[in-house]
Length: 218
Picture 1: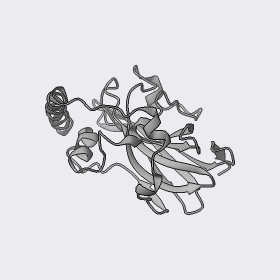
Picture 2: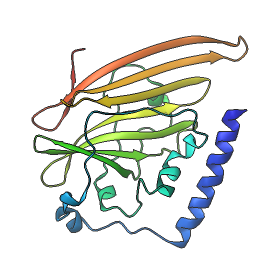
Picture 3: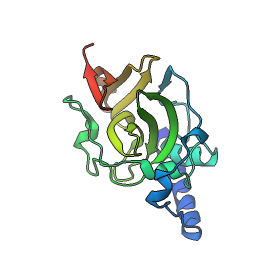
Picture 4: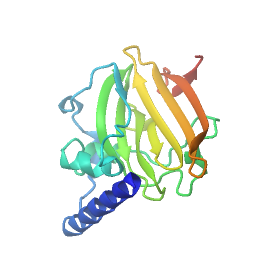
């Protein structure tokens, strides 16, 4: 029952936002604006940092719209232009998200956080919602940016599916830039009224000297 309430709230907010967007189109800034962007105007989130979904949040399916209303993400931000889509999972594990239609995501994302530079590379966190994937929560993605404001590499660090077979990914970054992703998957049998599967994958990454996310030994 609670899932249907989430979906109703999500659809209601999405329709409202769509109508608002019809009235006022957001213009993407030209590339030359990005090339001369003043990075010293962007606040830097100190490390360590971690993020996981708050499942007590009734607006979790509409998280992206909620962050817009709170001005934590901005449709007009020039940094949105840096977002690179079509990102694939780096792992070989069988994650539910890879089996769905509409993956990898193609579309726009929103700048959410900037972390301290790693060597000469900027590290940004973006958020986006894949409306083609039913029951999926918004994704968060780390991307490294070089001195020419070009994307070097990308890593999906947060994602989730809230259904009978669920998936949840959270992450954390240490002060030495060790990035840890934690995937939890489980299935619940409604007829048997019990959990029939639960697996967990933990993976660690470091950013190498070329700006790429490299998986490390646990």
